[in-house]
Length: 227
Length: 154
Image 1: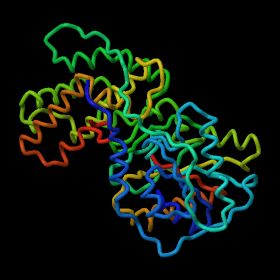
Image 2 (image 1 turned 180 degrees about the vertical axis):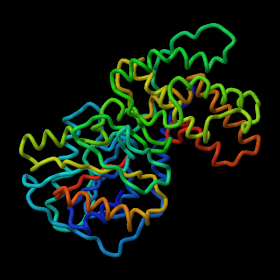
Image 3 (image 1 turned 45 degrees about the vertical axis):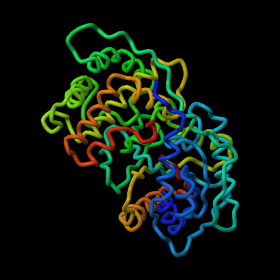
């Protein structure tokens, strides 16, 4: 990000770079850097809070009055409280399906409601659509139960498949919650509280045990939402 | 219940603190005209794109032009370590286009640019951005009459 600030400034544009990772902002030293101590993914701080977002922008624009490069610090931090979203999962249909697969099917109405309200914006479904989520989860459940990961039919690079599944669950969570979750609350819910999350964690352990390269299993979970 | 007493996102930030950064021997510094006369653009490293535009590959150093009259943004960032729910409910938390329009309506800024840019920020090799796509993006913004750029990470 700060590399681009240098490049733009060299071209004659005035820039203010917001930065969430303080050390990175300091080491890249953009012409004008504003450190915002917010969660990764929320550089304006608070979704749905226009007044707060305006305060961030006001500080950023005030830096245009500087006469030399420098970094300033926004005066309010938003800490990650490590919270876990309380999210009621719809009852699963009884049957022969793996619980994670049935869970995913049961969440589809919630997913559809969230997309109707907010649109599909959060990076899911670069490899497959929502109709394919239960089948994708079934492949991880099979690996968790001991199937060789290369033969389980995972529909793409495993970590990318998980991102699509995570997007489906986090969208559904929005429709099942009565508030906008704090950063990573929905990710922690998906990763630790859902059957799909448990299946993926199980597959991760199996892939490691089966000798898969670390880069293939390590990123099946969000480090920002791990325990 | 899982013990989540230590927010792991802070550990991710600490890891990112230590990543090697590009080194600029000198810091360019442009003094803009008054903000109330300036055209302002957003540049985000969140890999935003419109649905019909090509997705960002994980090592993609190119950029997408974002149309400020639209709201069908997609968050294309390839990382598990970014909160995406905030953006799902309010794109302004990464791409504050509505806030800029309000500032333009109030006369605080001169105008909102007709074009904004998105790159993929999770790059370990930035020379392609520094030498090629960065200057190309700067030209797009200059051609659009931009004076000031707010850069937002993800």
